[in-house]
Image 1: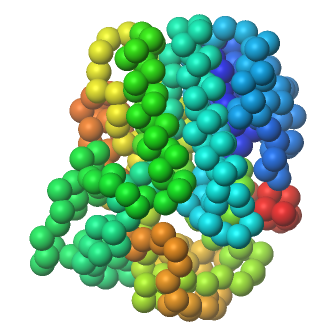
Image 2 (image 1 turned 90 degrees about the horizontal axis):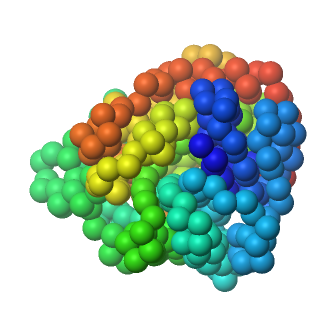
Length: 354
């Protein structure tokens, strides 16, 4: 297997490359990255030691693909993953679209030229914000869950959102670029005859995740708590009841291996997530941190923030049915992995978030 991973020096891309090199050492792995994220250079050195062929490239530039070797498959793990990208005053909306959508087009043209399989890592943020934001909630064990006393829209169950939930705008600029990338990928694959798989991921977390709240809340919270940095519950009731599910990149990698080895026609779009069984609120996460490192005051700021949602949990039962896949790494084990890094690398937030 000859594989190309974009965003290879980011958290997800580097985690996948390490997994593949560990479990399939005969695979030839090429990786592209633009190295704009703090911390990516550290991953670059480790990946090169593992034999990953890492090169600098900007996915927005078609000419950067001209000298790439042909590969069997491309995993697109490159994106600006923040739902606030393009609207936060510090990032450009045009650059967001160029990175997340134009970059995908260049990758699809590359796959078209070489008949390479294309695996797109998408997101839970492709789903419509208004019905999610207005979904009635109740607090159970310090976490929001949809209130069963009210009718739920199509695509919502106690297991989470399934793939039929509405993707009608608004979904955020970030979400719209990923949704458009999904559609283009499926169209390219159909028109030019190469396999395409779309994996909508929940929150991915583990040791080595860059320390930004908008890109990895579990890692950010644990590292910040360990370093006694100020933390806030933002929005909703200001008590930290907002909830997300959590998945380790190794479990994502296990599904990708199944897809990479598949040559039969299957459903092309599935959720890859921890689901309700591996979901947690910020309040519950704080309790976990306090039990390990002691109590800390978390400030309350009930003022709402753009695109925030009280509950986003993806139902991954379709992936189980289509691929016989389910998460193996438990949420406690993921938190333990992050905690050990927080204890051993006190400067991680400075390194990865400056």
